[in-house]
Image 1 (cartoon, chains in turn purple, brown):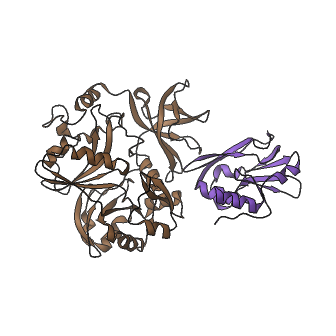
Image 2 (cartoon, rainbow over the protein chains, first blue to last red):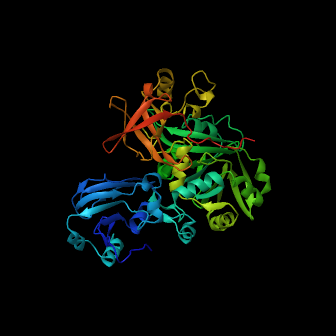
Image 3 (cartoon, chains in turn cyan, red):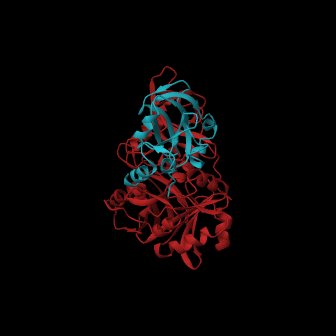
Length: 129
Length: 369
């Protein structure tokens, strides 16, 4: 059974978003997503400074089996990326909600987070898939 | 279509396998360790694979060897007792219908192991050519593979007389009171064995092997990445009805006696075409590609030359867990197939640099005595 922390918001495309204390938003992929993908061997993150609209392609995560696009769950400017994933993409499997984060946005409007799924709704969404 | 289940189905589920449909069977693609760890474990110790989905056939009767030689270009007539050969069912255009392993059980008895996906058509193909011989399909027989540098020691604990069994040979044996047929073969590039045994005993023997130190269950995912690193062809990827043995780099599977000037030259489907290809070389050849960086290439992606022109296509790709990076096989224009040639693969619009390399990617470690 995969973990779905209740303090995070989720996109139906399996990204999570966390509003940090400084008002930025950290984004990664869910435990359910990493488990479904299997061993992650490559991650492509957006460039720092990229402007992303909600739903824009923001990178790629590739496992031994498949490639999967990552989408920006909300709009904003990329202010940091997890460069450690370049050498250790397997961190996405080991720790998807912390060390396995993908990128951080300066959001245009944090209220966009409210349009995302709650942990409970996301867990139901995964169960239906 | 309802999926079929192997005799180890309940054990796979108990072990936490992720099951996927494969060639009409519900098969374990991986266990909780994951494909990379299962792959590395097999290279380091011993992996146990359920390959019961593959077809096991026995051909019996006078003239069986000659019959097989009308279907495959291998030297079957000259095959010694309990010796094995890799073979191809060719078609009239010199394409490949399936690849298989033939083991001679006796003067007029042959054991055939064929791919699950091709099983039905292979059976029909052989049956259509019977001239008094019989073809038995071993429906109630399971097939396990124990592969890796630790496999021999493990199996010898159960059956010491297997210690001297060398690559591409087989022998009947008794494991824990169960009569089995064991061959020293497999598809990982490692020393290892395939064990044909009654379905009813398969779970008990599998549990017995898994209880030995160093043995872990390994799924189809790692089986694929292991064979890719070993540079071995997989039907449906490197082999198809439109790919000939010469371009696949499998001329070695055409027995010397079956080649032009040989004692029993030709006589198999597409022989004339194969002989032309030996003479004139096919347009394409199978090569290994070393990929720069960590981004994987995928099957079906286009291979480009330095000018960006399409010169081939990736036929297999995966993560080479022993090498720690992506590896691939491709069919490319013959002139670009020399090791060291710099090419690129179009990965979703980006030209990823690759280099043609000799295969296998990882040295094969077969036990030849």
